Image (cartoon, rainbow, N blue to C red):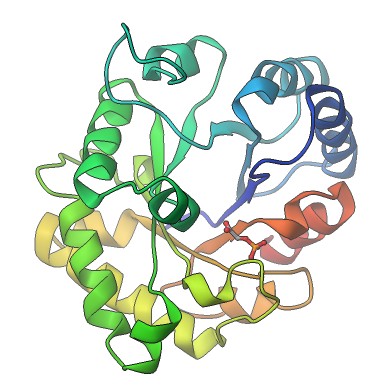
Amino acid sequence: MRNRMIAGNWKMNKTYTEGVVLAQGLAKELADGTGDVDVVVCPPSVDLKGVAEVIEQEKAPFALGAQNVYWEESGAYTGETAPDMLTNIGATYCIIGHSERRGYFHETDEEINKKAKALMAHGIVPISCCGEPLEVREAGKHVEFVVDQIKKDTEGLKIDDPSKYVVAYEPIWAIGTGKTATADDAQEVCGAIRKTLAEIFGKETADGIRVLYGGSAKPNNVAGFLEKEDVDGALVGGASLKADSFAAMVKAAM
Ligand code: PGA
């Protein structure tokens, strides 16, 4: 019913030249295809065009995603990237609401919601991130915290095709720390996310939306997450920076 998804978030890593080499390596690793698994690679914005060219030249079985977008069409917004600019170079996905953007760049749920709407209006699939900080988890309030984010981030969205909206649950305390949530921790929150999506959009739509886990996901632990009913894949940071480890995660999902 839902194709699994493995998405790589390169964050602020890889120059243009290094990004091309990594994409070429990944194309080689995945030359036999990825079965029913949807694979997405999200390089820094200056690398997007180079990776798009590799995908085209190598007929690589992965899609291109950006890491951020601005919601306006064009104009005097120095440093920002419009949705149209992403579609024009072949990006079909875009991460929004990553905890690093919420934290370091003070992005709010209201802004994340505007970004989702702008992306969907241009046919780009948002990978909308949510997740709680450590103190919220320790206080046992993680489910309500994430449910609140989901409600705000999806406010007023129209989802006609559930395969075109993706949620990534990334507990902040597990990102880049080597500290993973357990598969049961992930299922608890991913299940609550799907329940919330069902309340908002109806069960049929919610059943078609991919909910990914992210946070120190690695080749040796990804299978455990994927066994869980409401975990449909992974958003991968560190382990997406090497072609062999990222490809191993894709293969574990196949
Ligand atoms: P990590 O990052 O896999 O390096 O923990 C995940 C993410 O932030 O998307």
